[in-house]
Length: 68
Image (cartoon, rainbow, N blue to C red):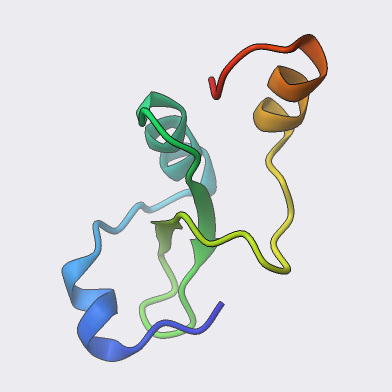
């Protein structure tokens, strides 16, 4: 995922993928973590095209539970 500089600076930055995914699980809608090529930290996105589905989301889908 390519993030523009203006967007990168407005988005919350997470030091680790785990921290970003924890925040994503707490959201009321599906979010995914990705490493930003500009700041090298992790951001969250609602876009899904071409992205790997996190393990917690796969498990929730299999068990029929909502996100988280």
